Length: 280
View: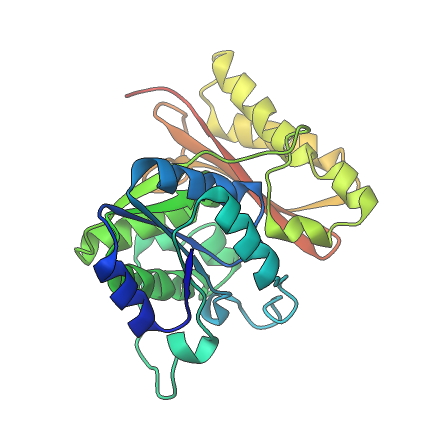
């Protein structure tokens, strides 16, 4: 497994690598969800590449950039076990050198939900992903369904700027009790960790309501909220039932919809989502 720390090293190694190349962009603090991305990249491609970069431009003021968990040695060991061939682990100055002043803004799909709750977040995401796809020129790039809005933003970016990668969305990996794996789960106290699976239970309750014949999107939102509100350690940020492609809020669940949410447990903010609804 080759570890590159500069863009020039990365480009040189990719040129020498067998195609197709699959890239899994990450911010490190790797868990089984990231390993699933790497294994899928390994299965689909001759060369599996991974980036590890805690991207400062996607953290807002007062965010947890400084405290975000970092353990490069452990991450590299996990990646080698998962079958990665190439790792790009740049310093901040390599990605954003002095004088850097170019950013990427994706339009409507980046505006609601996480875009509204975290102003500037997707500007940072789109910029760093654009840089990674441009430097690596992968045939495929892998992202997790847990960050569903990010997946839509990246798909829009990739299509609009003709970056040429196939964007592959890998299903959310969960703990046995349903909690979506996240690097931020380590911030939860034992009591908060015990309460956090309420998020997935609430989404499942919303999904069941639709499966039982309800098409009223507001009724689904109320059901999801009602389940979470019974957990005293949870504080809702938002609950959404939106078109799965545009993220426009729905009145009726008459097409595939993304039921998504964000909630706080203490100072730790977690997100989750499921796809509900019918249609092609």
